[in-house]
Length: 269
Image (cartoon, rainbow, N blue to C red; front, side, top):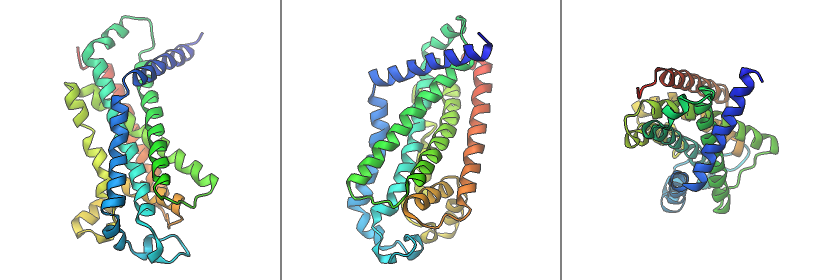
């Protein structure tokens, strides 16, 4: 068996370990999914009337009356995006727990691939995050979200969310490696989870003050959100798709190199 085959076998073993732990201790996953669900219900039922009235015609599906767009159709893509952003907390927590509980030092004494530890965590968290996004999408559909995407566009949505989840998970794994405690590991990814709010997830960026609008237009989640909304609702995507993929690639590459370097240094030793 080649070294690549050994690494793949050990990565699958670590992946199964992380899934089993998530099943036995589902509180973290449930909490991470519940947060975007609560925001979805809050913005739809409590604030939807006032915020929806401010949505202008540029956000409406092509060919439709601008005033006919329901706020749930505007906000749901942003909440789904928020679910993926929130999911990265789980990776930071699980990596940090293994680092602080000493199991990593045990792994290092065993004849297993060093890369399998991080790969298993990343794949395990990726599956949990995508499933969480599916759950939130289902709840959005149940309360009135009505996308007009084709089957191919739904596949593109799934692909973009998977690429984003993979990129954020690698970045969060690096945070889990350098965090001193589990508590700090849960706090480090928090700015990422709130970035969708400072973009076009809740309201259009052209309704924001100048400084905040500049930040919103140039931060990663705005082009990603506009791409999701365009695929799901038929709004104009423009060059947001390419910018979104560029951001995902940059975040993922940065997270991968950071995580690999931090794990190789053995920050706990």
